[in-house]
Length: 437
Figure (cartoon, one colour):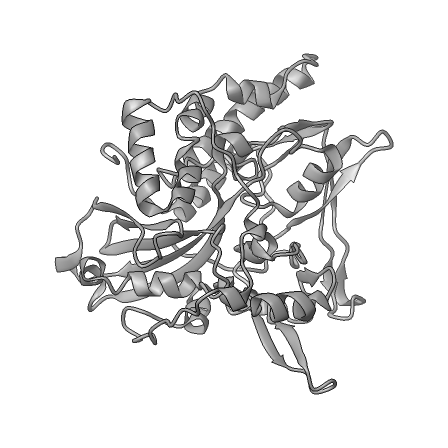
């Protein structure tokens, strides 16, 4: 239920919040991505370093080279959002996931539309579950009518899906053709497009947050309330709680822990009550809906059991065991292709730089992903970054990475079966530029 809430652009809110923060003396460095965690001699985090600027595609400095800057702090809070690239290294170094479930994810795709006034209903919120996905695949939609005849529409697909031929982007485009949804967009104009992974693990996947010299906060720690498809409120609260905790630590309270403070806030009971809803959909659409109703309205979210999660990258079956999916061609009015969508995401990367999408073992892109799974990265990427092309040198196949298309959703870093794709920050300022999203 969304009664009493407001529908606004999160991008506009963040821009406004940045102004308020700067007026209070906070320094903000837009366009400078944190690329490295810094440690002292004792192994304690002492800050971060921004990435070097002006490195060429060959890895050598160009004539516009500028070295990164070290930002040193007594405490560093990591708020990288879903699947943070530095957070991954912190989790591995400090064993922050020991004792918690693996994080699970969904890929959320979103468009902003300007629609005819007669089809605009300010304040209308619509959520759906299921269609056009098969009943054994978790997913659903959101639709928000904003001001100025604008409508935000999105579709989320759980990344624990099993069919390597599934294409989340195409499922989103097909969703908009449903008569109950299409009527809002006919005669309208698509303004923007974007995609982002979201953390779906919830309560049982929250890692240990504290480590020497800092803590994890926001969606990099996984505070999303999955049934609501909302996590901005919990992310903001986690930042407030962490600020108070760090203040106490800096004033000599060595026992102050962000995790313990989060557990004492309203975040913890909110996530606890919905902890079984997302994993219950392993029973299928109808089984998940039935269990969720029972858990919510009969048990009040206090069932004496907790369902657990499995890693998303291990859920695919071989392509030979999966049915291909025939998606309809886009009509250019309601449904669209990926490249025209990437164009209106305003994504941009300096072309003469090392690719920020790296293969740990390049040969496995063909020997495993292509031969066993028919290269699912061609389909789960919402920006057309990955292509299988003919290798003129060998006469075989090779994976071509069009890194300049990347909209920074992180899906490849999550869903690759062997975790062979590593997403790292590109040169500062690169990526999508979303107006009003």
